[in-house]
Length: 171
Image 1 (cartoon, rainbow, N blue to C red):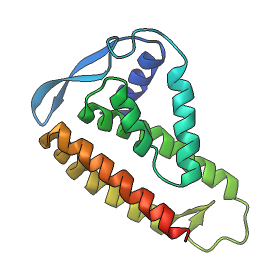
Image 2 (cartoon, rainbow, N blue to C red):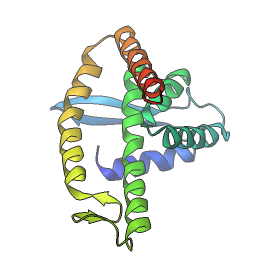
Image 3 (cartoon, one colour):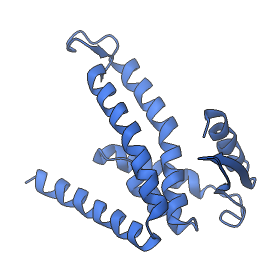
Image 4 (cartoon, helix red, strand yellow):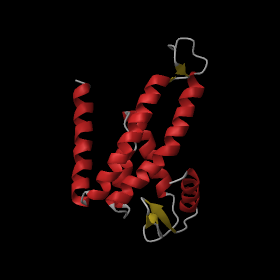
């Protein structure tokens, strides 16, 4: 996807339009379904409340919103692969605005170590970004070549691991 495609998709989602486009991926034309009228038949405010709840909960717990948004999107009628892809696409603007927030809120803090831009430690930003770019390729490959049943089990296992970590790190 290009950033223009994502912005158009977000606009069409907010205006309750059907999004079905043909895209070329690895020299193969495929139909990309981001969100359709079958999934969201009436315009309501539920996605806004759910999105706010997911954002609040994930920020308080310090974990990625995908842990909560993938199950929500799956329950809304999307396939597991589409839920994962849509959740990943939603993370792009969240990461951009979150980063800007940390930069702006820490820009005048004299107590920060060198190599920081606001509250963003630049070496960590570089390491996390490079790792994410590399891991995204493998994650997309796995999501498209593994059955939905296995993807559900992988998601549940990840949620359990995070839960155990959170409980036992507080003890």
